[in-house]
Amino acid sequence: MGVLLFCFAANLLIVAALMPDLVRALRVTTQDVSLLITVYAMLSAAFNLVADPLSDRLGRRRILAVAALAFGVTTVGCGLAPDFASLFVMRALNGISVAAIGGGTYAYLADCVAKERAASAIGIASACLYLGTAGGVPLVVHVAHAWSVQAAFLVLGLPSIVAAAGIWFALPEVPTGAGPTAGLLRGYLDALQAPASRALLLFSFLSFAAGYALNAFLVAWMERALSIEPSRGALAFLAGGVCSFGVSVSWAKVLKDMGSKVALVLASMVAATAHVLIPSSTALWHVMAGYAVVSFAFTLRLVALQTLVAQVPAHQRGLYNSLFTASTQIGMALGPMAAGALLARHSFDTTAGGFTAMNLLAAGAILLSLAWLRPLLRLAQAPTSPPIR
Image (spheres, rainbow, N blue to C red):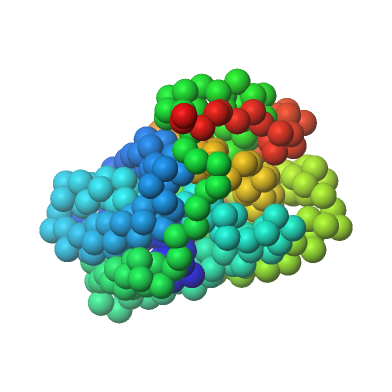
């Protein structure tokens, strides 16, 4: 699962990290390449609404292993794509394949681990995830420059296929306990009646729209505005991944000392401030420091949300994970898409233009998400659907 999460995290950011290289290799525009991020995230969100609830019925290990295999195969397919159209199709299939991975891994952990240790387990899983950001993103950039852009996808796809076999043969199937919910649509309708569920959707959507708008165009902005080569610009992802890793491994203690409410408010304020300051950076180390702070705050919010979702009753954990993951994927799709449209009309200037406006909007979205904090904290008390008789 650690190998899978590592490759999954690096794959989320691979298009952003290689954006200048993809523009040159495929002879397309920056806005065209941003469509690869959008189609990946939108299809992942759509299929996530089915994949995670199916894991409540069919077993999480089985669904997770199939998804991991499909993810590995389609990632290899991205590396073998000969042109932009083929890459677009493979990236779309790649988005479908990851639908059950993000939420599925955390739901599986919540089934396996006692409630009082859930925060620690989620922290360890998140540490593997953010090692993918810290090490995987610089790795794929190095491979792209040493060999080719296509090879960068292969180094993530092939290990994922091996991980799929390990999940299928080595991990046990864990019963969800209360049985499946009474119909997929009915389950969603019941879940969305709770203010806590609606708050989860809005909070996570705004958080990811802001975070991934910055992720998608950070390297391209550094190249154009600061004349920093993409291979050096990827060091920002390394700095961010290291900070995210540190938050993940220490999250259980942070949660105990701080509590979810204080952690979410503090992280939101810090993230919004960092977004505002990053466009005024004038050197690589400035950007690395700013992005590290953004990553720290983003991860603090994300692991807090995952810990809240883990408290949902076991037989609906997949359904609630699907709501959470779908809203994050929609944010990941619409955030970069809106940012791409803004940057297509305005400049990548260091202190003015589209990149600055994008980060101001991102900061506003993060602060706006706090409006739903109070109902969000009641997520563990969300109503449950009766099992099928």
